[in-house]
Image 1 (cartoon, helix red, strand yellow):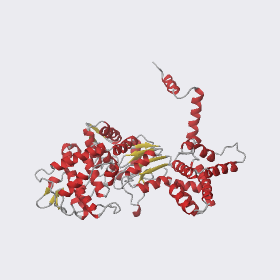
Image 2 (cartoon, helix red, strand yellow):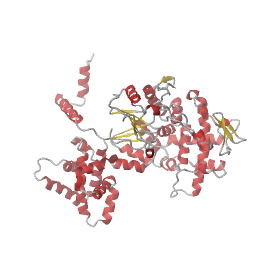
Image 3 (cartoon, rainbow, N blue to C red):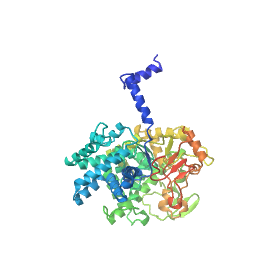
Image 4 (tube, rainbow, N blue to C red):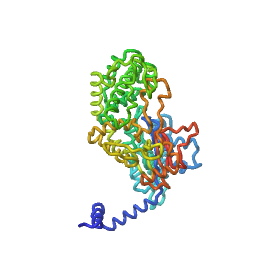
Length: 560
């Protein structure tokens, strides 16, 4: 039988020719470990807002300005530093403007290439030469020569300037500047963590995913909105209805039609034919682009929103009845409506509905879809599953994503870990297993993948529960009050209360317990959350529990 030593030698022989090569690599790796730690950037709750997202990437989450300061200090004025930063963030636009207005563009090229090389040298200061070279998308050898001027060159300055002049004379200055700014930005962020929610109300989650697909080092901790789209992509009709409703609510049907090729015309025709009356103001889209759509489109979106919301409540009700283990019977509200009086009973109390027009609901069988509704949701399901672009983006979320991540001894999780009032982990039954804490999250990761890759119906159903269920680690509230938000004016009944997790992560000792339970050294680690907004205007800090918890809905921190 082969010994462990022989097995290791056999494994090493696949990569290295002899003992000397192995020793060389060991020395190389040991020296790399002695270098300063690369900068990690944490983003959460991007929600489709591409412009703020791309600015964070372009600015290296503030690291680019830091490198400019290190490179030039008092040698450049604040205005000059701002101009240089803008060039690095948005090189194409800046070059175009300079060409239009600058009479001496050659000098501008030469001056700025010199500055950019110095910033690049600073940005690459914590990395090995080989890693810096890999960060250069083009002109690898030219950039390598400029950033690391060879020792054997006697007149370094003349050698350096001759290369820069040649770049300008050969007409490749634009490409070169773009390449070196890309390298600076790449080295400013060593690793990017997206702590959930790429999707939601913003108009360009597709652009964000395309950028992330090109990014050199990234991981994703799925958020509830990501899970919703993942569920929709694997054919869960409850998730599909929610996705469409939210897109209509925020005036963003474009992403479904133009980006993902999902035919919304049958739904819009159905909505216009069924909901003839003028829609209530509260149904009008919350955000609306009059450059792309007219006033009549606004009305259409409102009617689409109502039509899909009613379908959603019906099919969610059927799923809740199918899965009593979800314990979501309190969300069965269509059968609590008095359709003659226009009221609804919620938690034993009667409330007046602000909209009493439900032409597709049979009061004797309120959760039953009409023939047209059934046909419609079936066609939408086919469209979602057949969308090549959507499936490509969702596969990327699966490839780079997980329920949580342990990275550099930090625990990254979008929303929460289900916890009871007494501080014990919530015991959850999932596909025949009863689990809690880390065990539950680990198994959940497998179930989420089963929903997509194994076409497992129970797992597909659970994707909707993960969007809005009380014990979902992606949601973190006692209920999702969508029906109440739409149809009941009383704000008290619309409340969604946070689960006990958010109370316990304010306690340093409890945070240490959580970290320990996840196998992390609790003394030198942190919990990084997204999901819940930090009310900075009210004096709330994103740093809690004596620096054990970092919580925010945007850029959390540049480096822990």
